[in-house]
Length: 404
Length: 194
Image 1 (cartoon, each protein chain N blue to C red):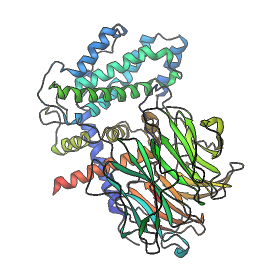
Image 2: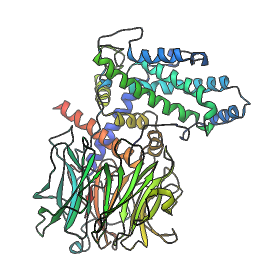
Image 3: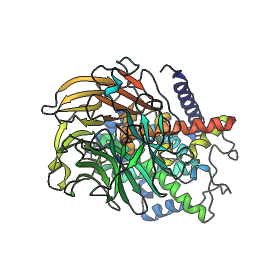
Image 4: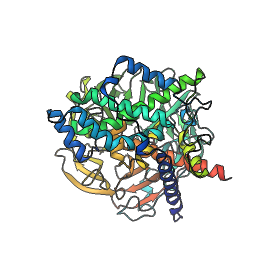
C-alpha cells in the first residue's frame, strides 16, 4: 500500500499559497485613504435604504459594459475530483493491512460522483472491495435523471443496504434497498414498507435488525429540520422538530435508540450529542431527547455502538484549535473510556471525518477531508488501518455516503 | 448538516479585545454609540472592505456593502444580545450584503444594467500578474459558499470553527467546502497548463 502520498498535499499547499497571494494582491488595491468616511445614522432613512438598494442594481459613477465573472450564478454541487490518501492523518496507529481482513465486511457501498458530469451532479452507488478500495465492475445503483443519491446505509446485515435518493423538483426522497452478493454484485430488492418520504433526507442510518431507519429530514418549504425514525415493520413514522441543525444519525442494533449531534440554537454555538428513543412521541426534539455528551469543544460526529452502551464521538482536545480526535465514551455516564484515534494535529484548518461502523462493531470506516478526501478502514481491536484509494466519492461533511 | 442564511449574527466570535471593551461600555451607556462606531470603523473598515472586494469584485460595491454594515450596526447596537460581538456582527453583515449584491447583479444582467469591472479583470488593470488574475477569476466562478469559505480562511485567516459559526454550517461542511474549492482551483490550473 506504499505510495507517494506527499504530492497531493504539496499540491494543495501550493494552491493555498496562490490563493493567499492573489487575495492579498487584490485586497491591496484598496488602501485606508480610499475609504469614504463612516456612514452617519442620518443616512439610515427609508429613502436612503431604497437609494442604496437601487445602487446595487445600477452602476455608480463609472458605468462599464462588462459584468464581472464574480456575478456568475452560484451552483451548489457535490464534486470530488481527486482521491488522495494522506498517511499520518490518522496518527497513532500502525498502517498496513487489517489484522484480520476476513473479519471485516468484504465490501462497502459508497455514493460516487459520475466524473463526466459536473452540474447537475449525477451520483450513483458503487460497491467497493474493503481490501483494496477498488470498485466491483458492474456493481452500480443508478437513479433517473433529476434524482440524486445523497446517502447510503447498511440495513440489516453486511449484505443489505438502503440508499436515499432525492428528487429536488418533487421534494421527495425515495428509499432504495439493495443487496450485495458474494461476488460484490448489487441487486435491487423489494421496496420497503415506507418506500418514500416527503422532504430531503440529508443523512441516513438504519438498525442492524433491519427494522428501523433514522435520518435528518429537511422539510419542503418550511424552515427547521426534523429528526425522524421510521419503523419499517409497522410503517410508524415519528418526527421531532428542531429549529437548529442536526446530523450524524446512528441507531442501536435493535433500533430502539437513535443517536445524533445537534445544536438547539441558530446560528449554531456548540454541537452536543443526544439520544432519543425511536418510539418517543412526536414533538419538539429537545423535549424528547436525552443529552448524551456535552464536551468543551463540542461533538462533531457521534456513532452509537450496537448495544448503545458506548458511543464514538469526534471532538477536539483542549480548544477550538486543538487536535481532532475520535474518543470512545460510556453512554450511561458520559465518561471517557479511551481515545481511539487522533485525526490530525489541529490548528487553524482541521480534519473532519464521517464514520461507519460495521455490524460487529469491530471495524470502522473513516472518511472525510483533510487536505483532500480520505478513506481509511480501521480494526478497532488492533488499531491497524488501511488507506483506501477510493475515487470520486461524494464525501461531504455531515453526509453519510459510505456504509459497510 | 444543513446550511442556513445568517440571521442575527450576535453570537459570533473573533471580536478583538479592544472592540469588545468599548462595545460593552457603549451597551451600558458609558460610551456614545457614535464614538464606538467611529472606533470600529477606524479599526475594521479597511479589512472588511477588502473582504467585500474579494466577494463582490469591485470597490464601489464593496464600499457600499461595508457602509451598510456599519449602518446596520448603528441600528442594531442596542439589540445585540452580546455586544462584545460587534466585529463578528459586521463580518456577518458584510457576508449578507455581498450576497445581496451578487443576487442583484443576476437580475441586473437580465436588464442589461452594468457595473464596475472586477478588480481582477484585465479591464480594471488594477492587478499585477497574470497568474494572480487567473487565480482570482477562478475563485470568482466557484459556487458562492466556496468563495466565502476561501475568503474567510485565506484572507481573514479565521479558523474553521470560526468560519462554521460565521456561515451557520458545521465544521465538516467548512472543511469539505474548502477542500472542494481548492481541488477545483487546482484542476482548473492544470487544465490551463495543458
